Structure formats: structure tokens, C-alpha cells
Image 1 (cartoon, rainbow, N blue to C red):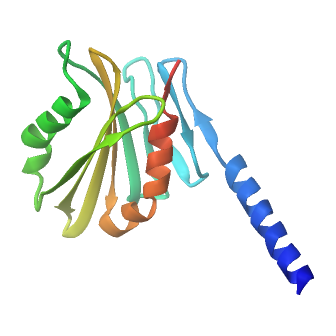
Image 2: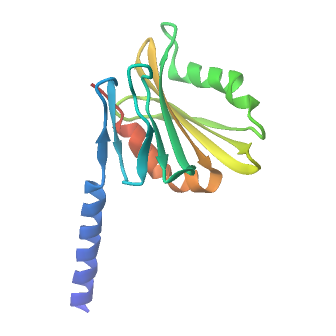
Image 3: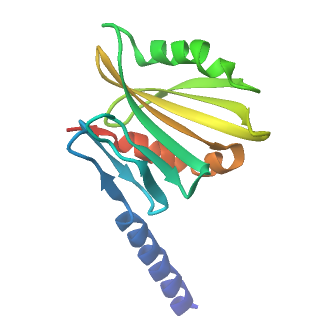
Length: 169
């Protein structure tokens, strides 16, 4: 029995070590930030370049998880919560089947808020989760995750980890 427990503990330790090493840092010269991708399932689908200062990622495919990172330059004094409310009122609420979720405070290397919402796309129930991270009084980064409602909910720990790892250079 002791051997079985020891073997089980060994597998747990080995498994957690392989998860820790699966993380990959993503950054480019054109970007002023870096993020940690917690799984090799996250792939870059649009690279930052001279014309575009943002990158896009998928978790397997767009239905499993899709991430867009955008730098938002705002009026001085605009908070992450202010930008979240503006996006909700002016952009998100016009999506078919829109259902507003709640706003929550978020802390990582940069602090801000998150908002969750649901919508319908091609007759499928979808979910969105946006992390608004305040860099300074004029800059907010929006990490916009979307995907199938069921599948995006399953990787919530990964979306949180990515947002917590967001770091300015």
C-alpha cells in the first residue's frame, strides 16, 4: 500500500512539473508587453507587426478559446471600469442574444476589472470574458477572450493565468 501511495505522489509531482514547464512566454519587438501562455494548445494566429500592434491567439480553435489583445488609449483619468462600461454599452450589447454578466475587480501584475457576457454566434451559445488592465492613467490593455460558452468556462483558470502574467516591458 505504501508503494502505491508513493507511486501516486510521484505521478502527481511529475505531472505538476510538466504543467509548469509547458508555459511559454510570448512577446515581440513591436509589442510593449509579454504574456505567459499556460499550454501548448494556445497558438498565435495573428502576429504583431509594423502595421498592427496586437496579437491574436486560439486555444485549439476559435470555439474552444480565442484571445485578442488590444491597447486602448483613453482620456486621462478613465478607469478600467469606465472603459468596461463604455464597451458594454457601445459595442457588446449589440451582439445577438447578448446577456450582460457581472464586473469584478482583477489583480495581477496590472490591476483592473473583468466583465463576462454571453451572446449567440451562428446559432451557438457563446461567452466572452474581457480583462481590462490599467497600465497608467491613459492606457488600458483589453484581453478579450471568447469561445463556446461551455468550452471557455472550462479554461477560466488559463484565461486568469494569462491575464495575471501580462507584463509591460
